Length: 268
Picture (cartoon, helix red, strand yellow):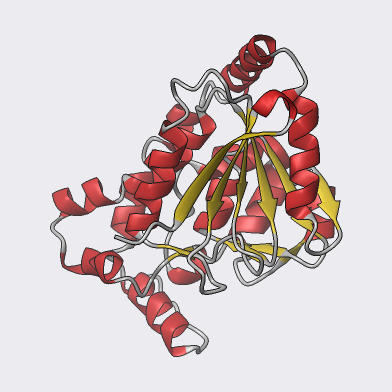
């Protein structure tokens, strides 16, 4: 099995910074089911790590992630799964984002190129996001006849508010530029192209210089207050996703995407 995810620890002040790099080496960085598992395992590997205060998550030089890999063989097998098997398989995404959100360490995303769909879901599960000026975000799920899941809508709502969240998710064909993402509150810093990793590491160094226990407790308190009702608001998004995957509109959306044509949705 090829490792798409690498971890480097012991960086920065007192060695308290770690870097998790997700790079499939193809310039696209799609999230296959195996990549989801590897990224989840990477987050969980820090559970008992008292030596790391900050984790920087970065993708490739040309992309953070193109989102879920619609061409992956395991992913495509979903269309033949029974409902029970499908529901279990669909837990991979929410499990990933929850693992990153619940990390005790402060997390920072370094975004270059494009960040799409599941990539956005992962990015908004982090504490901070640094984005290159020429990069963009996009949430294409609705254009594929699906809903935005992985508990992403509540996280986006906390960052941007209701109207911007609807705009980002419903207007699926619209790219969100780095400038717009910053103005909307979706990212915290915009930097020159190719400099997101460097800027993320500079921010990480500032955080790592603070008292580790106080930082961890503060993050926990803020997250508990901000996300107290998230499970209530999004506990059904997995089942909504499963239901949407059975519609004709979903089949049309995926076929149009793979065929590089405009979809024709009929509400069926």
